Length: 184
Ligand code: RP5
Image (cartoon, rainbow, N blue to C red; front, side, top):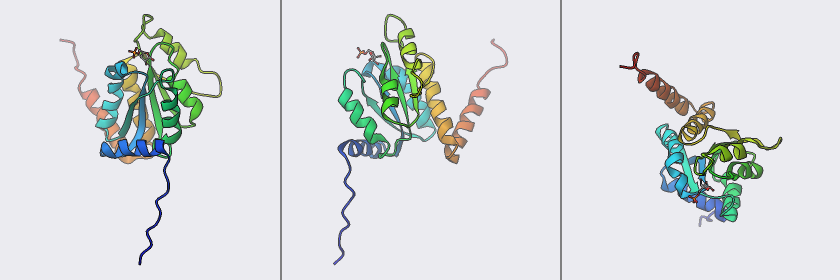
């Protein structure tokens, strides 16, 4: 009788991440984290770009301040679940990207969001001004920053994935073709 091989035991965080990836029908390579559900209208731009290029994303509301345990659990299990890089968007005193980078050696792309009375200047400084040793690649404030973070993530993956490279080339070609010669 064939002996059933015992499946390698997964930690709960790995299991949860793998489950989400499977549910989306595509293995998630990029984790897109945001501090609040209210950040989604901006952060959606990153996911849209990556989805359009066939890159699976694991999208989560995780706050460094309000859900620190959820954050730690997810980030520590992410690499084993197949995540290759993080995009983190947050507003106010935005610590999400920095604390993520403190936990994982994977690349962290930070998007400061304009949800406060300071229109994102607070989040920009909190995200970009990392102490030496723990880098966060910081993008512009708001939706265009999120879009560029998605494109940058695709460019990083394109180096070792010809299908992403092809999709990125097509995206840029289409973008160039959409710019009119004249404004009228
Ligand atoms: C930050 O506080 C979040 O990233 C969000 O941008 C902001 C406001 O969150 P809500 O009060 O709308 O949940 O941590």
